[in-house]
Image (cartoon, rainbow, N blue to C red; front, side, top):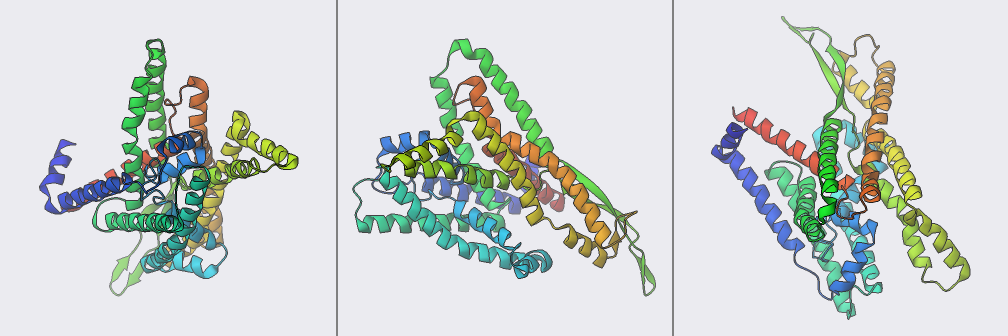
Length: 419
C-alpha cells in the first residue's frame, strides 16, 4: 500500500490529477457554504429535521441544501435528466440505438442530451423548491427581483456543479458526479459525530459498541455485494486471415449482482414520498374530505411498518425495471455474434440472449433484495436504537462505498499503466 502511495506522489501526471480533484472538491465545498439571501435559519433547521425527502435531496446536493447554499440543488437535476433519458430509450428506438450501438461517440451524444435537459429541469426544481420554502416561511421578505435572482443563482449553481463533475471525469480520476456527492456525505460526518458526542450517555456504551460492530459488518456486506459478479464463459471462434490464425481464445462476460446501483432507491423514495407531499398540501385546505384524505395519505409516512414495507417492495421492483432498461441481453448477444464469439453449449443469436437474460434475472434477485435491505436499514436502526444519530444511512453508505471502490480501481489501473 505504501509503495502505491509513493508511486502516486512520485508520478507527476497522477499527482496532478489527484490534486486537481482535491481543488475541485474544495471549490465545491466553498460554494456549499455560501447561502442565498433571505433565509430564516431557525425555520430552515426545523423544516429539514422532519422531512425525509429533503434529507435525501440534501445528500445529492452534497450538503448544499442544509444551509440553502448557491448549489442547493446539487447534481440532482443532472441525475434526474440522466434517468429520464435512459427511460426514454424504452420509448424511442433511435435513442436506444444511439446509446447501445454507436459506441463511445453515441454515448457522448447521449450525455450531451442529458446535459441540455438538465437546464430546464434545474429551473423547474429550483422554482418549485424556492416557492415551497417561501410558503413555509423559510425564505422571508423577498420581492419579485429577489425571487428571480434566487432562481437564477440556484440554476447557475446546478449547472456549475455539473460542469465541475465533468471536469473531474475528464481531467482527474474517478466519476466526477459521484465524487461530488461523496464529498458532501463525508463533509456531514463531523456534524453527526458532534451530535453523538453531545448526547453521549454512559449507560448506552454497549449500544455504541454494537453500532460500531454492525457498521463494520454492513460495510463489509456492501463491499461484497457491490463487487460480486457472475462470469459467463465466452469463446472466440478461430479465423484464418491470410497466413495467420486469429481467435480461439476464451474469456468471460461479467454480470454484476448490483447492476442498478443506487438508482432504484432514488426512484422508490421519490414515489413513496409523493403521497406525503400531497398530504401536506391537502392539510392546508379547510375541507373535511381534504382533511380525511390528508390523514389517510399521512399513514404512508408515519406508520413505520407500512412505510418500510412499501419502500422495500418499490426498491425491489425498480431494481428489475432499471436493470432491464440499462442492460439489453439481445444487444449483448448480437455484439458477441458479430465479433465471432459464443457461449459454449449455447447457440448464437436468440438462445444466447435468453440464456444471458435468465442468468441476469437470477442474480438481479440477489441485488434487488440487497438494495431493499439497504434502503430500509436506517428505519430499522432508528427503531432498534431509538437514537436518531445512530442511523446508518443506506443510500449514503452505498454511495460512499461504491465511490471509494471505483476510485481505488481507477488509481490502481493508472499505477499499472505507469509500471
